[in-house]
Length: 324
Image 1 (spheres, rainbow, N blue to C red):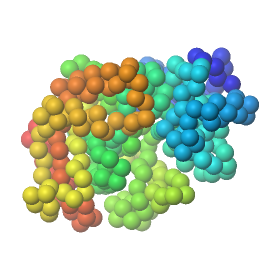
Image 2: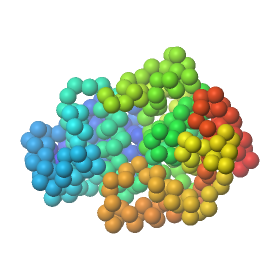
Image 3: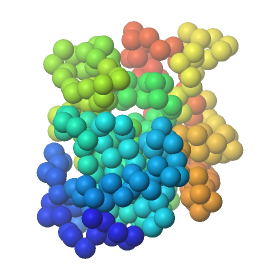
Image 4: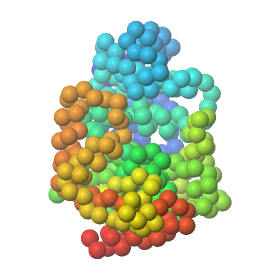
């Protein structure tokens, strides 16, 4: 059971993702990381009684359909639930997450929700603001692709992996200020792709596990040679335009530098977690977006969403980076 702050228990296993030290009661398919980290979060098996109490309180304050966006309880914890799949309790200080699968399911799906949506609440409570991005290592630096779900971030990342570049993180990106810029931290060594895209870009050997019943998207593990486990300086951010492409010429690939104001707004729109809207978080979020927009080139990329054009889009990005 976790209380208002952190748990007294210290899980025996330690892993590192997103620059965070994760101490877990569950074995996770990740390596141990560096000796330093940005934050620490404990991952615990939640007790049925504590979750029963949380559900009873949540029912008095919020409709069940909104529980995926979090219900803040009286003691400062946040309760999250995906109906008939998983439920989580994030401690008030963000240093512990209690988790409870509600039915048998794949390990990959559980990890995706635990280390994605649930972890984002813990990170925000600790002062971090993760972005919704796919990030690839190119020539010793991190290049991030931002965009709404379905805009093609992971597909573009897969096309770059196919060309020999290495994935840094897919879906959730944690940045930390470094010397003269920002550092991008590595996430799980996997991509989330629809089957057709996975087979077209990564080949017929690509195999994955469905994320959830309501989507065909797969969690596809990548080989060590396809991923990078160390943090890198962030060189550029590309914001994906809607799939319609450039309205002036839908078949054309265009890359344009955004103003600092446009870049700041794009970073705000592409936060990983849109549910937490308290004044403290919003102040930090605006300050963070402004700092990133001032330090890192942010560009808008528009292109037609067809499989045959992906290599050309990849080449256009690489050419743009080489000019920079």
